[in-house]
Length: 181
Image 1: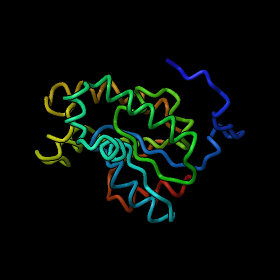
Image 2: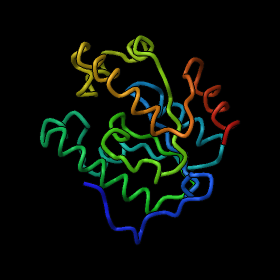
Image 3: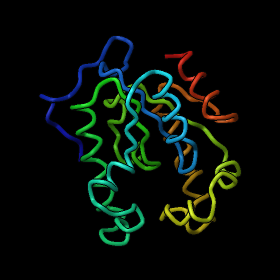
């Protein structure tokens, strides 16, 4: 359900970008949002806010435990509440979203300039160790993960202001993002 309370919505600038000056990284699980976000935050002297980490800290549970306890729908409610809080309260930050946030939070552009880190599925598979996969409840079944990846790719591209291919290291990707900001 969309938030109809416009009193606290950030104003839009003529360019269509939100005026809060945040950089919002989106992409599938394992696309490098946290790694690139850390490098980008260092390069720009900004704070990095990792949505999954913030939820884990608030709930005192890992994402997999949250899914097990309250299900995906419950997790998405927490994710949405965090996104709305970020949109209303955070400025000049780098925000690394969870892979599902842009899918389940249609107002993602209210958070800032949205950058899609486009990564092919094979690269994501190669990046994630078994331990990393175990932390990601939606990555347990590889066939389902691939189907989810294919389902989400168009949505990521549609809500992004910019798309960048993630071939290369985090420093190079962050530098490329800085050139178009």
